[in-house]
Image 1 (cartoon, rainbow, N blue to C red):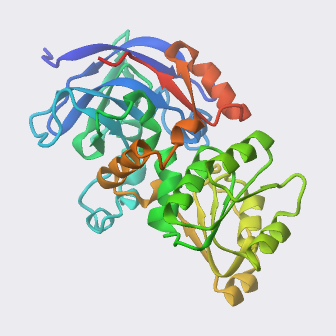
Image 2: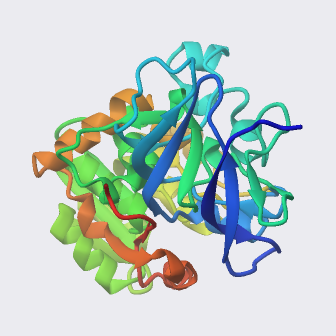
Image 3: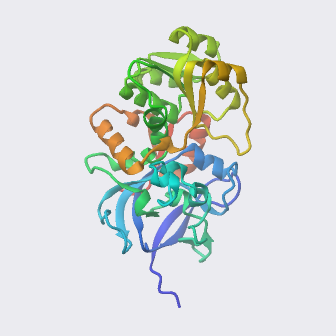
Length: 376
């Protein structure tokens, strides 16, 4: 007879490809070993949640998604050392802590990244969540599955943050916001006085604009097709904006920068936009690629343009962030008024999660945050 302790939860469950989220009563087991049980206050909604819901990335269903959780620690496993009950935390991606990538400070390129974040279970194939009938639900999405009132994470991907910051705001730092900001600061290493262009002015692209300003770039260009996003980009620090429906993007970027940008970021996942980005680079320019299309998507470029221009194309996961260092740094920048990512978000109640998904897909909301529980 099982003696496992469970906590009753409400979870948003995805049962079929492309279907609406359904709020269901479920239960989650108590933390073991180095696990942490977190009462989720709010969770950001990310493009990756949508592409998994739609099975562009194949993760087993039925599934509890959510990977930008923020909340308050409820219980800890016996091997947890540095996280305590009552701590305010942000949940980020899972990694093994043992492979060469993890040991070199590049946990986002962990050799077990895919199974730990997209496997639908823990590394032993077990689930922590059961539905009302006692059937297992696929979970451990990004080592958290935070579209629920409680989430089970690991100490390694549970990041303690200052209680001075509003916990309901901080969840997107765990993925989307740190991806854009980290791409600029950690991966591309944008330098003072340089030029930077973001292709896509969604939450990731505009986080990159904020970070480019922090990094000291003096020419910051945002490219998009939505006028309201371009206006917000200017408010957040873009020195120039380009509506790609109305202007030749490559020609305009080259004109603004005097020959091409030194740094660029592609966050749309559209191959033709990536090609524009590569063509917009100047000599020795680098473009980071964070936009995630369906698996197997191909893109093209002019090989001689790449070769003769000394250009670089860099794939970037999670902003190449060491989360326990970078996320608190972003929180501190926010508290200092230097990283206003709160201007990107809109809040939704848990029962309105499908409206949040719709608004996100239509582009009317840059970064939905789902309020799940009151802060206590």
